[in-house]
Image (tube, rainbow, N blue to C red; front, side):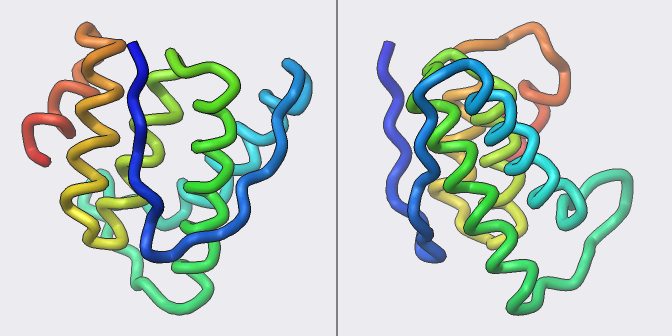
Length: 116
């Protein structure tokens, strides 16, 4: 199964991932960039230029991770959360659908996919 995600409006260059060590580092870096801006548990952080830059870089990291391992449902889910923050509904939905196609058992995946 191959899932492709369209290029985001806030595009940035993709990091290179060629081995497991880079894969882990890029995933953690991307998650660290996106998490502080995530809408969850009643938290709705303000979106400013820095947030948009962080989210774009985080999305690029998740795309690189997915390029290395196309079955990383968590990377799709985190990317969906970034698109949610940016109010990119189509890209959000595509990301959550890709996560759900891989991981149907995780409640957060099913919830975000249904809400998107």
